[in-house]
Amino acid sequence: MMKTLEQLAQQHGLWRASQRPLMADLPDKQATGYAAFDQRLGGIPTPGVTDIISDFGVGELRLVLPALYRATGKEIAWIRPPVGINAAMLHQQGYPTENTLLVYPDSDQHALWAAEQAARSGACQAVVLWPSSLTIGQVKRLKLAGEHGQCAVVLLRRQQTYSLSLPVDLSVALAPSACGVTVTVRYCRGQWPPAPFTLDWREQWSALVTWPSSADNLLAFPSRQQREQA
Image 1: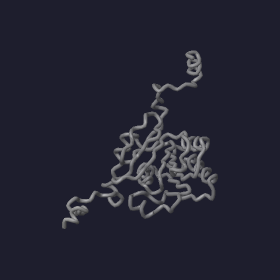
Image 2: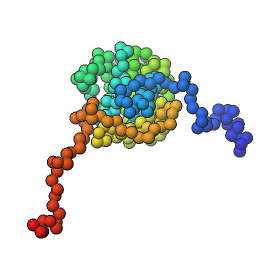
Image 3: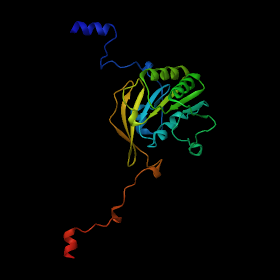
Image 4: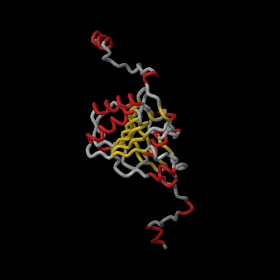
């Protein structure tokens, strides 16, 4: 048994938990501006592939927008978004709309091709893709394209499309919470995933969270015994 393990180790076919990637092998990361996220994960891998698993509209775009719209002057390519991208919202938050590229391919195959070409071109600082399904080979191609073009690739997937582990640099699942969104880290290249944590959005996005009611405004409903005694 030991001989077999030694042979695997010599052929680089065995990974030990004590072995961690060299820092030079890890992608750079762009801060999101959310302290709880950046302190634990460093930000969004750039270049690299980030996989975000959530239902639509729970705050996935609000999480990545600050990291994607960094001041480089390059394009942001949105590939096959399920709904229209609100230009007024981008402008209100200070994100330039003149370098926002919307692409609406007519099939999953064309969407993947467009994402790969945009990431590889060197003209885009980020590519955001809404895939209906993905294979390991397709993600590897996107990863290589992003490295070639020095581009961040963000995959936004719904929970029901999550089936297998993909060769991404960062994978997180988002779920709505009363004060913001709960982040569960499924994988983070180069480190152990931290415990689930919550991004408190009450200061930045007060209209999107649930505020606790004041106890002074609540009236106790009388019990059945109290009603009968009355």
